[in-house]
Length: 154
Image (cartoon, rainbow, N blue to C red):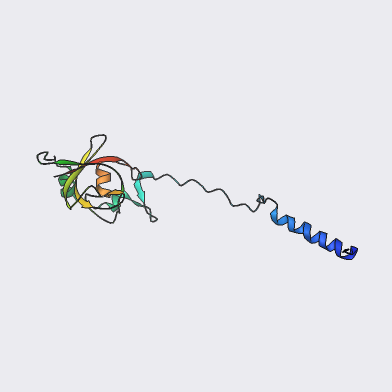
């Protein structure tokens, strides 16, 4: 079977134009999306889209801080284990830790690797451990830190 010259030219043109579909695509430098900028640093512990400071969100009273920093009573205290903590919800006030190490609600304390200590309410949790904003601040931790702490139950 012979294909006529009249059909051959358009057929070759269609075949070659289809090759462009498989050619590697290179972005047009004028149209290319800009590279994502690095997130700005978090000076002064600014939280949220409204730019509220950690100090403004932490509503701990002097009595709350005194109770959280009171010397622990080592008698009867038992270590539950070590856990990496992230900052919990700033909307939940107080000194607390939510962790799977706590089998039941109770009183306890957390101690950083540097020896800083704060008394907290132990709240049973699942997944990653969360530490309250007030506890993070009292321990002198950066809000984006993921420190390892030792958890004790009274």
